[in-house]
Amino acid sequence: MNPPVIDAQGIGLAYRLDRNRTGTFKEFAINMFRGQVEHDTLWALRDIGFQVAQGEIFGVVGPNGAGKSTLMKIIARVLPPTEGRVVVRGNVAAMISLGAGFNPELTARENIVLYGALLGRDIKLMRERVEPIIEWAELQDFVDVPTRSFSSGMVARLAFSVATDTQADVLVVDEILSVGDYSFKKKSSERMEKLIADGSSVVLVSHSLPLVRKMCDRVMWLDKGDVKMLGDPEEVVAAYEAAADARS
Amino acid sequence: MTTTPVYDSSQRRIPLAELRHFWEYRSLIRLLATRDLTVRYKRSLLGVWWTLLNPLFMVVVFWVVFSQLFGRQAGDVPFIVYLTTGILMAQYFTQGIIAAGSAILNSRGILVKVHVPPEVFSAAAGVAAAFNFMISLIPLIIMQIATGVGVPVTFALTIFSALAMLLMVTGLGLLVASVAVRFYDVFDLVRVLSLLVTYLAATFYPLEIVPASFLWIIKANPLFHHIEVFRSLAYGAELGMLNVAAMVVSTLAALWLGIVVFGRSWKNVVVTL
Image (cartoon, rainbow over all chains, first blue to last red; front, side, top):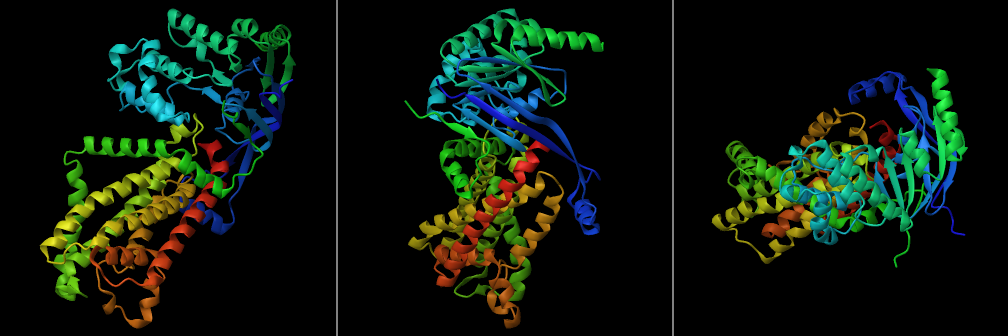
């Protein structure tokens, strides 16, 4: 059996909040001189452990502020965990907020190359992939238009097209399937299904519980930075729904 | 089939690995630097001319004032050539540090969403500053020809001066960035300090006017040695091996220090961006 694609052991992430809200270096230097540099620690995640096998679709649910997005960023290597250890085997394609790497002043073509390069792809290869990427996003008429004049749906379409252009071992997806119109949703889920069929693992964060129930093999319920429940989608989603109903 | 990359968060970042990043991401660095330059030149009315005119304006002002004091000659060359070489290097130094120091902060929108070594952005800003410096060598060449100094073959080797300064400003820029990501006003401090450093590097006055008891201040300044090496390559001033050694050592030290300090602070800072 292959080792898990994602192996998280006791990971935690702390945000440090300055108590004196020192915004400038001058204030900080003065406070340091007076010996008044203190900060509070806020744990966004604490003691999270789970594993994702190859080809598995792993769902994460939880209320706002539960630490879902923070967890995605840790898996995507953007944030280093404060404690614990996470091992990710393979390429990660993070679709955390689509179009984050785009420069609005640059054209769609330039942005495709730049975004691909930011994702660590070969630039020569990206130049060759511009046409198929544009075509899939159905933006042929806008290749040489700066993306600042794009609608948010167009930006999302383009970014999704770039991010899923090459096979990744792990897809980190944060509410992505909720963007775009009906036909784009259909098209993007078809593409996701193809990537999954080719062996990609998926970590999916979503507030759409029917989607989570339908797609995922296992689901983790996060609440205030802790794992509340981890297991069968039906059971976890049902328990999460029951808890949310009880609260309201 | 390539080997699968493995990310292990418990692995310590070692400074040498960061140097490897600069190489691995070289095409991204080039892309970011060209983007930086094209956006800048497209937006400004004067475009590339600004890069040429800006140091020349400074040269004119300094020349009008200080040629009265120091005469028309500085050693074997006209004072204006001596002055221009100093100011070009000083501007490269100051603008390079500010650009490399603010690049990471300016790209934080990307850095909190996509995994890219942040050092790459500083290096790209440094490369753009180096390109500007290379462009500004054109008026220097014209000036050397016009004043009869001529252009020795060693002028081609000024590329090594540009390269050493690139590594130096990238390192110092990273050092600035490690503070700047938390306190933006550190740039005020950097501007004052870099002005001090450039003024203490014999940029606009000949070394002969400095009293012997203060010479050590100038000689302890890494920028002074960078400028001296540049001058000897540009117009054949006497080259001291000590200058070269000081340039190399200070460059490597700045780069190493910047990478180490930035690496440590980034881990704590990225979560607050």
